[in-house]
Length: 265
Ligand SMILES: NC(=O)c1ccc[n+]([C@@H]2O[C@H](COP(=O)([O-])OP(=O)(O)OC[C@H]3O[C@@H](n4cnc5c(N)ncnc54)[C@H](O)[C@@H]3O)[C@@H](O)[C@H]2O)c1
Image 1: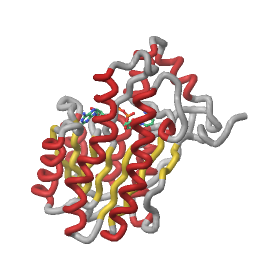
Image 2: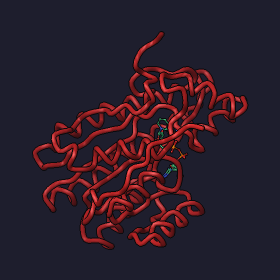
Image 3: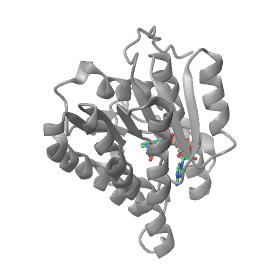
């Protein structure tokens, strides 16, 4: 049985307000829960109105402070609304974690124009839109931190995933460009590049590829640490990037992938 290290919460984010997109599931959910455990008030913005509210309720039940906001991150008015609602509730915004994302496993020939546009809108345009509304609020209170979600497939290509790879590559450079523009406002902008992590998205890829879920998990485990990641492990990397522990880190891409991109044997 695989053992995972546990880390005791130590109030790293006490007094902070965070907005987490994609917080209804997977990496976003684990990150929202970890932020709350570390003392932050957390707004979860997601299209999933079934799975989102139970996550916020769970945080509240454990003594935390949380709010669910229905938001399609591809739409400007809904991103603006998510930032406004967060500020209305807690008066400020210190942390933005852009976790929402979708994937389409297909080559150029099999990807429709609509699928391309949707993947780019949910994975990339959302980062631009949320930053557009969050940055002025952060700047007003002296700074903040933004963490975007790219992927190992934003650094190297992956098979049958053209729109996804293009979107995640864009997130890596959007992150760097934003870091340049907003460092002077004391706003740090970084991204994470997770490798295969056991979430509904990874299992949905099996469906798209027409292969059993177990096969995807098995293939994904072919990396130095010989297993897929857990969303909670990725969340720890996000916590580092939003916390004062990374106070001199901006514009970086943190690879969290069990060594998957370390090299080939
Ligand atoms: N799981 C992996 O192996 C893996 C690897 C690398 C990168 N990532 C990235 O991590 C992020 C989280 O993925 P996950 O694996 O936790 O997937 P997931 O499917 O479990 O969670 C994604 C969340 O995003 C939400 N979402 C989707 N479209 C949205 C929209 N238009 N507006 C608002 N919310 C929306 C979903 O409702 C869901 O709650 C994604 O950006 C994904 O690309 C995942």
